[in-house]
Image (cartoon, rainbow, N blue to C red):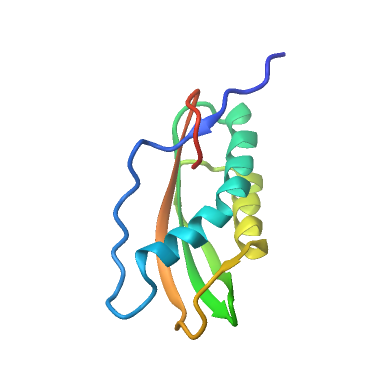
Length: 124
């Protein structure tokens, strides 16, 4: 049996709308890039059982502890995938990922979509 095709997002992600005086777009982008490889892995595994484009919207809080950042309180808000194993994989990914963060930033809660389409190269 042939391996499943790679998955990727649409060409454009929505623009981040951040409250003034909080995390910058670049700081949020660093956090999201840190979790991308593991998110991609969860979604590639799902593409075998769930062909076609999929979207999962997650809510999470970015929290800085010293110079390390963490994702806290991650939850699935909306999903075209109704696979509890894939959704658990995504939530575990967020719980386990750390990233470089600016010290002293207040926690910031965001909702962000992760899109993927089988057959195109790239990251979710």
